[in-house]
Image 1 (cartoon, helix red, strand yellow):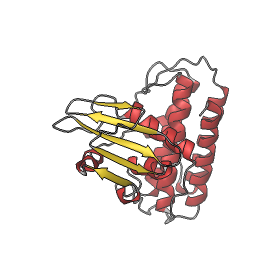
Image 2 (spheres, one colour; image 1 turned 60 degrees about the horizontal axis):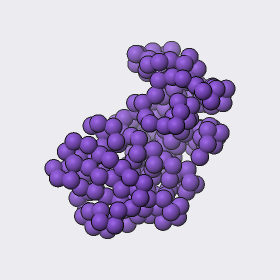
Image 3 (cartoon, rainbow, N blue to C red; image 1 turned 90 degrees about the vertical axis):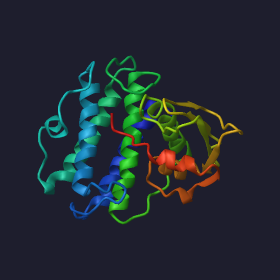
Image 4 (cartoon, rainbow, N blue to C red; image 1 turned 180 degrees about the vertical axis):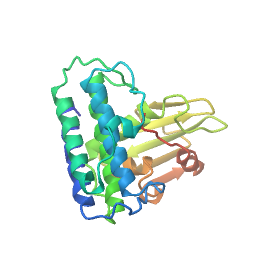
Length: 250
């Protein structure tokens, strides 16, 4: 995927996020994030957008040292929350569109450039929280395009969980393969008590294989879909290992 496609994905997921939450009680629970109600979800996503927008727009060399409420300049009234959120993701998309290809700023995941990093990260950040909005509204998640979902899996498995302390762990070397039955993409995650390493191929000797559509795997790996939606072959304990992975927003 290219930067333009990521930016359009931010707009599309943001639009869907707003449309499904119109008329939903801000005190409604978010099933996929049990500690949140809808108000928390909207504030969080808007705050992450503001954080990314500040880093890219101001070419910051480090992450801003402030909490979410300070970052956004204070929370709006409840009746203004969705329109405020909408203005925020549209502004983020505009800032990314206007940023130069040679953008230099702080990043936290491996990527071909800072601009690709931020466009890709915010596209998938917004997409996954779009699913949270759908679930909070009592709707089934709309399936993702296979290429976009596979890209999100790739970001998660090759960039997020390979950072120290962020991947699955086991008391012995363990591996599991992930295979998309529609896009043809595949990965194998190798992990032990110290680290996780991912290769972009399915190891036939992996301890387990998880396969399904790219969209279902994307949601399962992000803990938004029950494992039963994906087929597991091999050692079932890798599911328990994966369920310990908690992906934080930075």
